[in-house]
Length: 287
Image (tube, rainbow, N blue to C red; front, top):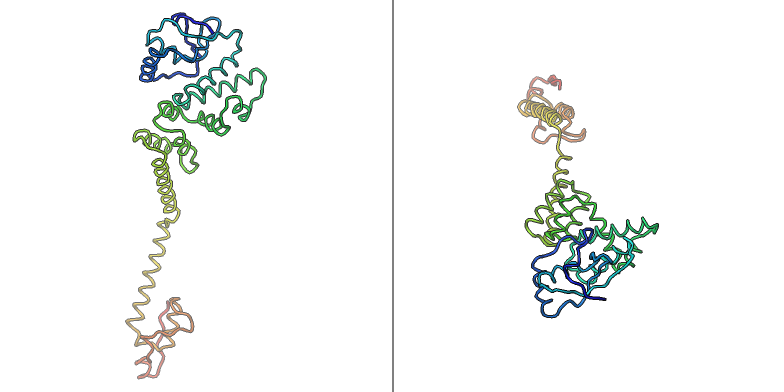
């Protein structure tokens, strides 16, 4: 370890961490004025930062002339990226946004593969000291649209909320993005977002059910005509019941398919007056 002037140190343009909170940098700068830098910066032989850019920026705000550094020589791109990922995880994990972390892990995985090392998520978790499920979830979120990744970068929504909305198989992409915008605008927590998604899915399923149960208009028209025809026949029998014998009434009702063959109409079960007077049969209407 050695001391170097802050002006002789340059930031790394390929640093996986891109965003730095100005308020946090000011707070760190006030701490550095009192206690100095406890964790040294990591630089290469050319003075380019490998890790510790946040502390270097805070040291500039605090107007420190010199900072402690550890110089690394002859590092491969993979080793350099590995140090950067470990530095961010160990020292400032909470302030590292989810997407930047996932992009750094993906770069590290690709760098290993370029070196001829086949890296699984399990092996990557051992090298970084992170749970395998955390790495799987992070790499999966890189497949989301840019709008969703921007919400994650700015921490408008959490990774749990984004995963719950975007991985729902019952929702279309347009609906998912609308829910993401609403969750980000209203600052929804996990439980609120889960309830919103559940209500949306229920509404969609209800709409699909109503459409599936909808009766075609031509079928409704056909059934309506049959009901009107049947109503006309029943009105005719009601108005002219006295003209027909009970057996005739039963046969006519069987033609309308209202009664079974063994059923007898109650209100018109009397003998026809015309048949009694003339002792002759009345002609049944042809239904």
